Amino acid sequence: MKKFLLLLLVGALIASSFVGCKKKEEAAEMWKPTKPIQIIVPWGAGGSTDQVTRVVAGELEEPLGQKIVVVNQPGASGSVGTKGCLDAPHDGYTWTAGAAADLGGYKVLGLLDTTWDDWALYLDVANVSVVSVHPDTPYQDFGELLEAFKAKPGMIPVATAGQLSAGHNAMEAIRKYTGIDYKHVTYDGGNPAVIATVAGETEVVPQLAVEEADMLAGGKLRALAVLADKPLELKDYGTIPAVTEWIPDFEPAPNYFGIWVPKDAPQEVLDTFGKLWDTTIKNSQKLADYAAERGAVFDPYWGAEAKEKAMPYLQIIAWNYHAAGKAVISPDSIGIPKP
Image (tube, rainbow, N blue to C red):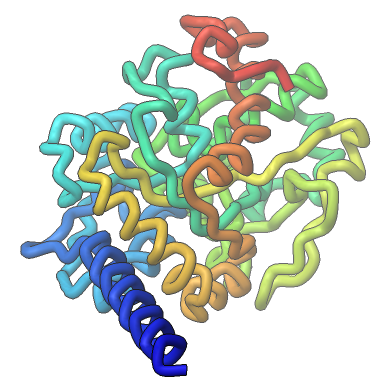
């Protein structure tokens, strides 16, 4: 009996020691930054990337115990700010953000020599594009706008945040299915593109719902279609019909946004981000409320699963650009298969 009790005691001590070591190991894996962190938003202030990144940054400051500074650095369809992150030390103190498809498509268009293989992806929301017009235009539904594009090819001005932006991707998808042409007018972000249409500089803006929400609610824009297979219910505006009412074979895919960290950053940084995504971000009521109020989908992922979720939209836009003769390399040469 004494022998048995002794064995139990030894076993308990070993188990306790194992648990203690395990806790120390897990604690050691958590990265605690010792200075402020910078997130480079490679688009203008007020746009989709800027909006959601500031919400995410605010949620991460407390668990990381450091201030997170968001810096807007627009230019060349987001590639300037993204390069700024690539050129900074890969020590975990400089991140960037945006649409996963932009990051994956830079090399296809010759904008920046980088692919998803260079980055760890941490997704937060998926966005949808809405084709809207200035209220003074005659277009009352998407069908009327399509007819106008066909009647005046290359003449109707459309505002977007530039090449590879969500708005440009939306118009190129519409062009693919309908054969229309348009006058492309570019700005340094989704918000400037929306404001330009509100001001009457352009007639049409196909940027993201989160960027148009305030102007739609205020009657400054009229929404004609959401690039989805289901209508969009937008708070303080109402129902926006699905583009499939006019283009039945249109195949949409979720346009995921998030934060990117160079893949060769310290492993403890990448592991800590993964843990924060599984806890703080996935349980963020602020992020969920932001998405619900502005027409986005709250859907966090990270790691290999993030790339799997974001790949369908990247496939669509990369191969659309290739078909239009705008790609400098074939998408499949960098691991983007045909959809």
